[in-house]
Length: 334
Image (cartoon, rainbow, N blue to C red; front, side):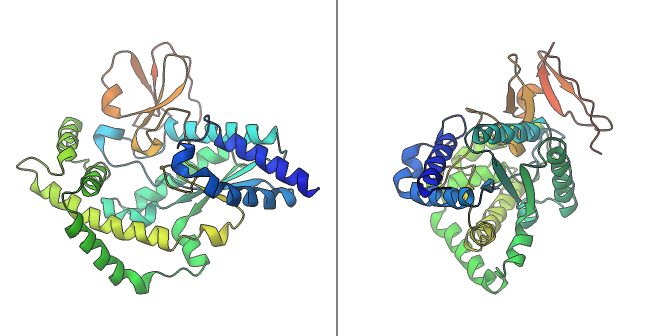
């Protein structure tokens, strides 16, 4: 293929990725003029080999153990399935321009951060296994799942000698940033991630409201201490993830996408445009127009206009849909 043709195809593929249907962040926020050349280069290398375009995404760690957000659900549900199907739509859009299409490489980091949020490794593995079955059912030739920690080992990225330094830096950050906007944001997000299954959904909602000021009500000191500890632990884990990131080594020709707004990175809508709540932070729903949604469990579980639907042999709903919606669940992933 001629060089000019390769670059033209790369530019057209990038235009698809940057379209508002798939791109979550603003072009200004991602600083497109600075990062576009590297993206074009990555796309061109794949096109030159006539191989699928590669995207990596650090995502789908586990359903957060928060009853207000996910109810009793610990396994993937329709929210994750909708994300898989959205990826297939992106693949179809790319294939209209470039026939080899897309490979989306999902890196699960759940095992790396499970202990931070009080989740057992067994639950993480169950989530990943279930997610892999959904992928096999829907998108086995497009989505490929990887264990983030295993890729670190495979690429000789050993962070064990740095753990004391990272721990010291995290504790210093906690002390120096305490009470600042960044710290309060971290407090609120961490509270939403830690294991609160022993508390009612309504109690958790009340705690999340208080978290906006960076502290919890009297009587909740134990939970507040757990949040503080988890904030420090996650600061360490986040440093391990970003300072010892195996993606550039293992996927040198990929565009390394994100679910958050980050400079120099392409942020993607995971379910559909405008649905910013991540699948593992909520439950899957179908609105009255038949469109996929991700909602907090407490917002829909007691509503009369939504009905829960179950997969065989599962105790928690797989999807909530508007009454009268013609959704049928016939698969069994256990």
